[in-house]
Length: 93
Image (cartoon, rainbow, N blue to C red; front, side, top):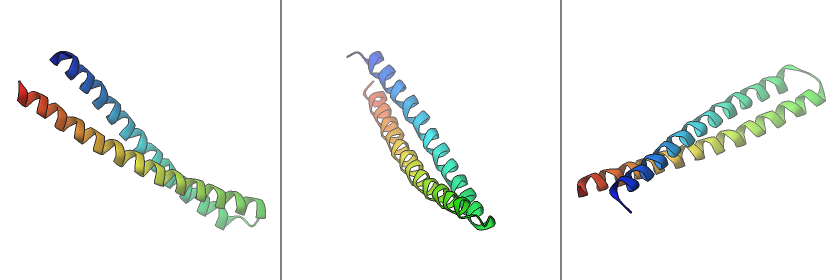
């Protein structure tokens, strides 16, 4: 594989890692908002159905927050390792 092909491949993988890291942050943020809304909904209204719906939203938001945090951290680490790989390739030149 030529140097240009390696660098293009690394560039594409870096862009993919950055995009997925941003998606993880968005999932994390939306999950946090969903937890907040679920808790507010479950506390403010007195209907049993609304209470269960609020608790369900809070649980779903908690799961989304944890998943988004994991995705963001995973792709941040991948991004850093790809940058190290780029610096290693640049040192070889």
